[in-house]
Amino acid sequence: MKYTRRLITEVVRKTLQEVEAVKLDLARTPKDLSDVDAELAKVVATGGIKDNDPKDDVIATTHKPEGVAPVGKLKPSQSSMKLEKALQFVLNMLWDENTDLQAGGDLGVFISNDNFIMDGHHRWVATAMIDPTMSMGGYRVDFPGEQLVSILNTMTKGLYGEMEGKEATGGFEQFKPEKMKAQLTQFLNAGVWKMKPEDVTAVLQKFTEAQATGEDLVDLAVAKMVKNLGTVTFATPAWASSREEMPVIDEPNVPKAANSLNKGEIDWATPVTSPVGVAAAANRKDEIIPESMRRKWQKLIK
Image 1 (cartoon, rainbow, N blue to C red):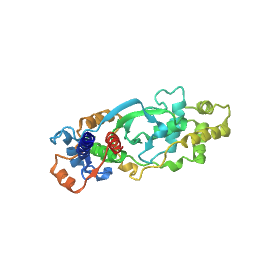
Image 2 (cartoon, helix red, strand yellow; image 1 turned 90 degrees about the horizontal axis):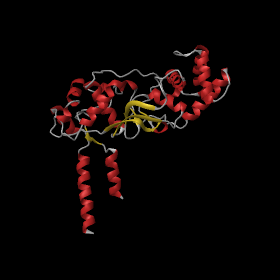
Image 3 (tube, rainbow, N blue to C red; image 1 turned 180 degrees about the vertical axis):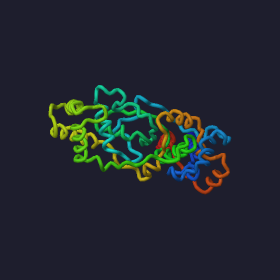
Image 4 (spheres, helix red, strand yellow; image 1 turned 120 degrees about the vertical axis):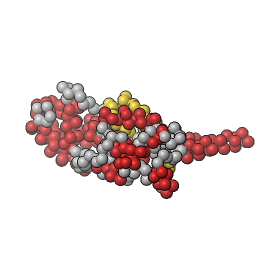
């Protein structure tokens, strides 16, 4: 009994120490991009290795190109989407002559530990329309989506000098059968990108496994796409901001950003390096618990 009590006490002590090290200061790392101070972001984005605690800011990030989760299990972090672009992606993914854009595979973007994708939403939804069971890869970050947005927005301005987010282009309400039929009919009649009308017909016949043409072919294709989308979560989280307020870390910079997270270069946890950050941290902190920590708590509760 004494041994069990000592064991539980030691586990609690260590767990509390670890939780103490994961406090997110939202005054230093705001959620919305427009609220991020560019000059402070430069300090925060490189201050993690200067705060006398080399490990407190480390955010474990692993590149998993072979797959993080089935596309149907991944969730959007924002609702900005353009139906025309998504359907273009579908047709190009299915076209044998195109080798640059494939369904599934490595998104090359950050994916939080609660399965929110930070970018690549058109590729995600296009793959879902084709086959929601396909696996999609990316950079798995051991951090919740809501707080990860704050970290990435600080990096957006502090490391990469992007002062504005991308323009919003519509929402998931576009993905209705009638609108999808209208857009596919346009592609079928006029072609799209490098595809001629006959190429679009061939791609849709292969996708539907039918030799139908014209309106009948479009109806079959849309019915299959809508059915596949039925397994996907379109609902955005309550914390999601508009597209203009979301991070802008282009694909070539993602590996560098992942390296910064792994090294703990982003000074998001206390202690902090900047006097401004110290004052802000005294007034505003949110505690977050990574997935690895959550598992420890669950084990302790049992």
